[in-house]
Image (tube, rainbow, N blue to C red):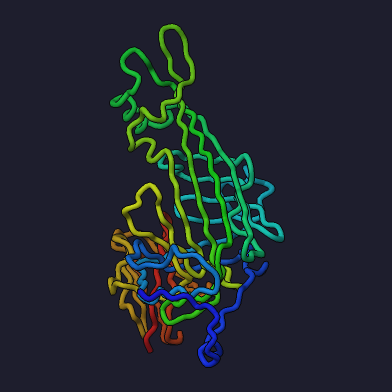
Length: 380
């Protein structure tokens, strides 16, 4: 990968050929109700330069490839399954397995609670309110801006409500014989620092963009207490370090994220996430959809769902390999605009895509049990 510093040059001809401009991330980049932000994702990046900060830079990631997709949907908060628990929420932020309830004002989007099936590596179907709103998006942003956000949330539950955990604890009781665990209390402490540390140009998949560089550090600390019962009574005890890893996962998670934001895109143009707990691993991340070619021609985006041919020209075929009943299929362009919506009641379907222009698109497939999404290409 090439990486070079685009400082001002004294040679007039070179100076005139490229001038980066320091940008401000505008208020218009804050997501609002109805927005669907589409991303391409990558599991690893072996190149260099993603962690170099500075001003008037050129970051060349033309060798980056992607192998998946993801989207962020911002919906009416009242459409959520746990809407009654968050009557003051403005937005519902959908992500895998969970719902986030958020407040939106003129300068930020901040999560105030979650509802879902898993938290912090624990299989806990819970609805939880944060003790302080946690900002996930801010604007405007300019070089030198620094923001710090902290929050925590907790849950208590009887062990008998979770048979799988009851079995696990019975087999791996860290307190020994004669001591029973009646219930658990789990606390998560979250902290985040965001600093605008650089600016310049990103080269990505043949696309050049003027960006503001954000250095984001996240820390999550998990504490697990057990209410233990003995012949003389009961009391709470911190058992975080006693429990097997499959129960508590990583009790301390530290991530560093390098974000590259444009002035007016709601999507993050590019970001790299470094797990500081696994420094030997390469960073994962995501890009705004449609900028980078995928590194695989595999048409199956799930072991349960098949999409073919890809690229398509006349028809795009969808088949639920597991026999699920497909209820709805939607096609979006890379800007997140809905182009096609078909109501279906079958395990396979053929979409007529002959009227779509050549380019990259996303298909979203909803069944009664699951939702699937994948990028595909029209090649006329």
